[in-house]
Length: 367
Image 1: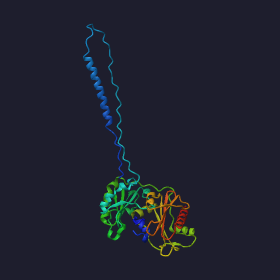
Image 2: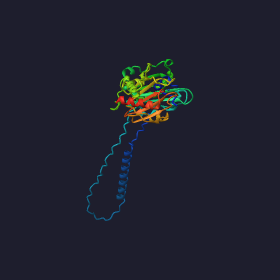
Image 3: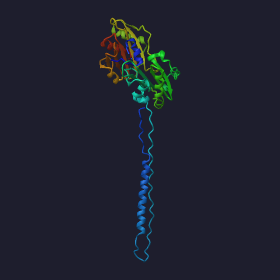
């Protein structure tokens, strides 16, 4: 059961949630090898010349009568071509920050030392892949009892909108923000965002990553041509309601929407979207909200889906789909892939079949 989620996941599932540098080893070019080879060739020639000279000096006289002197053409050694040194390989900066490897961002021991309790890398199920913008997102959680989690993201600074970038270096008051406390800092061409529960955690995480992030910031790129352009939420609402045929789907009556540096950055580039509706046919005692998250251009994280008990299922119009019956203590999740896109449906008010119907309706609306 997924009791440990990212802030976005915990917030998106709302009160239902109970607790949410790759070492590039340069191939060392043996630049001295050709020098050693040239020296050996010179030594061979010198030794051979010594042998010839010694033989000439020790040769006995054959006769006193002068003999015709043979004209010997001087031997001109053929110069050997000087080998061209093999240039050292140029370090290739990954197109995705840290090559998309969270283990290269920070290891578990480093995070544990910062938080003060044993922590382990534990990326949750997310519809948005930071890699579509050249970034990487990572989260760690405590291995013991109780909720304790922190996260680090690295994006190329070039994809950071100006209004977000203007907040770089502003340390928040985590006494007010709690688990959603976030901090943004710029290191060279890298944007490092961190989240946690204390100011000390945030600054320590940023400092631990910053210098290396500047060496591997990733590079911005456009979304795939087939990435969804998500319409307004009323279009999604009507598509779901029409598919159900019950006139029981209405606008969600809450005012929540996901937020944070990472989310806002992804939304700005069309790589994330969110809609929520209420299911008026929800069983007694069940929350009515149905959360629909979009990841245009993103592929699902199959490892995370497997860790959280995803079961393959069928959704009309989808390339693949997985049902996570115990995503939280009360809610289920349906993850759907269609082309280079991912969406999820999260609710506690519908069956698997109903959620699949919602997923199919949304895919059809997206075209």
